[in-house]
Image 1 (cartoon, rainbow, N blue to C red):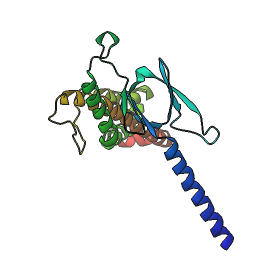
Image 2: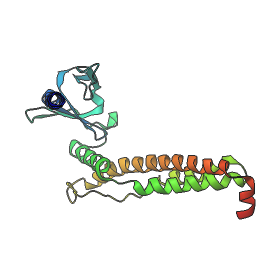
Image 3: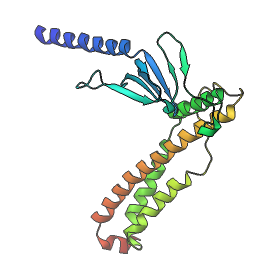
Length: 222
């Protein structure tokens, strides 16, 4: 029994040491244009790429490297706290936001990714998919079961997004409208993906119900 306890403690200490080693190893941060923040260790900066440790190492390749294209980067923050901004305001290259505007745009993306809840869209999609899969094949063919879920997901493209974030770091500050653009971009994507996932699950469940029931059920009750 004591041997099992010692072995368990050994692996616990080893795991904690490995996590600490990863924390010490990934001391820099990549700030991507899509709002993602990736921990890494910068190895070299090339003319068109940044050479760094991969933020998601594997057991087989714990020291695998990553070449990150510089046009995907907004900035790099080093372990000593200094930041190097790679983003350049250049309308000819399609960069229509200034550096402060782009920073606020990314704040919006990050807040939407962190805080925007899509449970409503998921469950509505699941309900619509279930009803479509269970009922519509009886009224004209299975093809019609796909239409309501896709119509619902398409309706989410209508530009109405309510900001749901506990902290508005740039609210009332200059370029807050740019923050909203970034927030809406990520929030809308999350809503559509959630609705499609829910619709797919609901459609499968409804279809299973449809094929498990005899035709006489629909003739008697619907």
